[in-house]
Image (cartoon, rainbow, N blue to C red; front, top):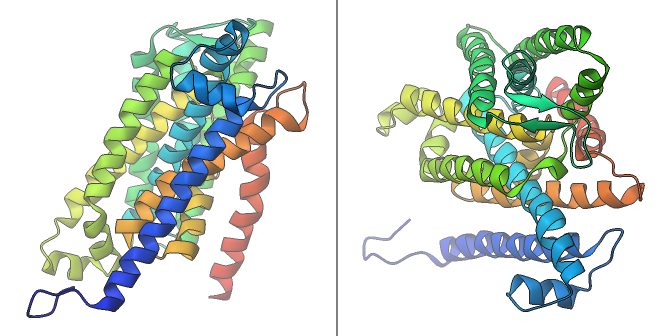
Length: 356
């Protein structure tokens, strides 16, 4: 917004400044939460030692092993997965113009989980065995991710098709997602039926979303896909604002609506598939975080998208830390906590839509 002389109105400066300050605060909270997350646990590591180790200074060998081999990969995986799922949910809600859209509620997460399970059990894409580190070791990450993407893409195609039907309400799309989720869950159960005892136990454990299973190599793959997808969504923030105003308005402003929708849905689906393939199903993050961010920072995607990226990382990191500590020394999968958080929010959104 500019005047004819090129100046920027004071109100718009304050508008930008306030939203930028909010993003700065969330970034600070995320940084502090990361330090606290890697400090807390069965073996407490003082924050000063955490900071020194991250800065490259020497600390206790025991602390370094716990920090760099266990807690830091898990904490970073929570941040990356939370950011990826949140931005995927935000993009889907805008692309489909459906406030209830997310990878979990639309059945895309269940489709990705079935594809990954099919690769691991049928195509020998991974070794299902109970070990001291994890129940599943993925030996062919690209095959596993590829199959997860194919099945989740099929689910996304059905959702897009339903969204194009005249009179397709958000509730109809969500019911379609529920049906797809049930279908792919049945497929996963069929695989479990033919599994032996060890495979069955490992497969059930694997379906629980858990950031603890991410190694540095797996974290690297998930991070690359997440960064690329986030960069694309941030670059198209203005296009999503135009689409929210209506397809005809967006086309009048020069937005290639169909292309933006298709590429955005493909990237959101791929991002979901990669996260599910390595970490399991983590539900409701892609639904809860975008709505929380909208209530605080508004619907302008130039600020909403970075807010959901930061907020998703913060929410899943805090949830993962609480899940590690709440039943210590037992570790609760973070997906259990996010389900308890997300289910009431989902019901609230349904009821609010009915009242509307």
